[in-house]
Length: 429
Image 1 (cartoon, rainbow, N blue to C red):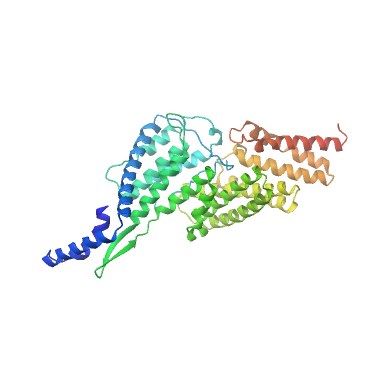
Image 2: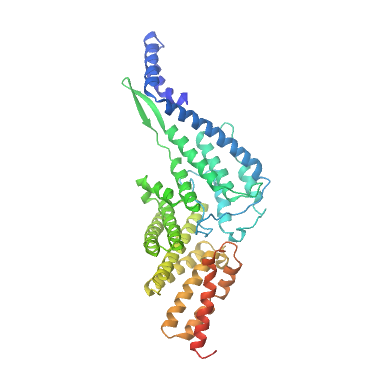
């Protein structure tokens, strides 16, 4: 901390000069100015941040020891976002230059994002991948930048990894990330001697954006929606960032479900329309991203698929809240779903569409609304045919350990009821 404060000041006095009596007096005056101008609280905060950094590294070492003997369990968070393609903040540090540790990390995340069947289950399948990542991490003789990256990797692993007591605590992780941001903000601020005057200088630090990005997701996952939205409110630049607008859209979408739970349908309806607006913007911004890293490209594709799925879900909720099939929204949703299927076929051929639980649930709901529109139009035969397409998808939803809330399960009852009504209309029963 002393170095941060005094280094630039002393350099400005001593560079290319002999240490004369006059220079020593200048140094004495600088120190007196610093002593008189820096509030005690600032110094206390600096020392506190330094201690917190040491605590963070100690905790990371502890996690390093425990994770190697633990199994993977995916935690989807407390909110409604269950799609493994974007329920976690996968794009941390995506703007940095390629680094083997980061690439290992992205490969792990890419693999993990495909495995919705692991949710709610413990698995040792990824133990080797985790060990390889952790083996690349060292806490000795690292730059601050490297420490931040390694800390983030360990934090992220703790988020999705079952510890020895079979528990993950996202609120603890939030505190750690908030602490890391405070450390970076203090490091960003230094003092400089300009013409004999002490000036506060703010140094740019790109890592703060990555930690804010993590917090945006963590706040949403713990239903702290106001804190999540404040991250965007405090940073105007984020409004044109695909990952931040994506996160804001998910936050508003999740919050809108909370309004439904409290029977505030007016706020819910406004929220779904707003979330759709932000998600559509994030999709457009993701489309403009030009990345060289092949692993990151794949993660971006998954972000876009997750975004589209949530847009469709917003359309379906709007129909539900208005208690009618809105043909324009249903047709738009079918077009969006075709985009998802095309992207998987062309850009993610290794993924089986029927393995994607939340997207198949979304299509089941979409097919129900399409069949309901046919039923209301008197086209009972095609309504039944449309409902028959949902059979495989309903099995996926029924067996899911992710989609366990009642709102996910009720689609099966609605489909069976509509099928029954069609058969009555056709005089089959």
